[in-house]
Length: 354
Image (cartoon, rainbow, N blue to C red; front, side, top):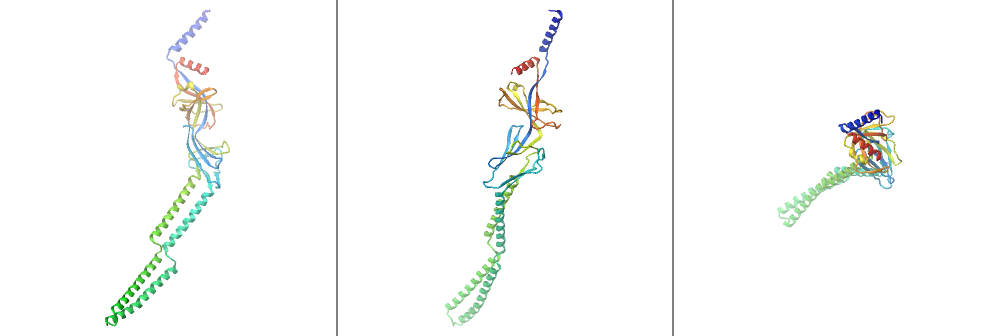
């Protein structure tokens, strides 16, 4: 062996010794593919049985946070119409109207209740105003007749009194005359009460009953109107951008692009190198100025990918440059803790060997 070869070997050996003995730390990153998703999605779809369903999916949490179904009666004519300005890529603000649902049974029920309410209100006005004028006039005539009859008989009573005082009639005859006079007075009182009744209208209890019926009908109408406003007017739960529906049953997809979620498959053997809030560097062909993501969580349930146990890691990021879009595939580098040269080589061999 030549002297030059020995010198070169010695330099390599010394370099390796220094590399593995000195406290050097080498940056280590797990490189995996990743897919961009919106932070949240709101999906409007129709069911095979005519139902209208809305689903709110939080991709950051990995769960469905909201689910609603509009169920209609059999035979009900239902029409759903999206807002005319909602083309794919349209920007929508929170609580903007997305679409309207019209139901024939709802409209029929509202018409019926409004008709009953009008009838009850008319009945109340009639009860308050009293009986018809003809009935009131008849009661007045009856009172006048009773008073006239009482006045006429009062003259007879005065004559009977004079005869009694002159002892021309008996006590019994005079008592009968007084009793008849009291009957005429009672007849006047009855006629006065009847006149007051027909003039004042229904009793207080009857008026309270009509008031209760009106209040109940108004309550039912308010409930139906609130239902028509909330359940039959679809409004956006958050601000976002509309996307093209992926299938015929899906009517609309609203994506929350204020933040994005990055889904990455990570090998089971590399799970122990991951930690919350680790930086994730992104790279893609013909896409520049990509933002940096932050590791949010790692699922604890494994699945097989190409025959290898794999975990799903989730990162969160904001797109301040406008370079991202849902569905974009990226190359990701999860920045782990720096390691020693020996550990770096060991991990690389382990990664190659699988």
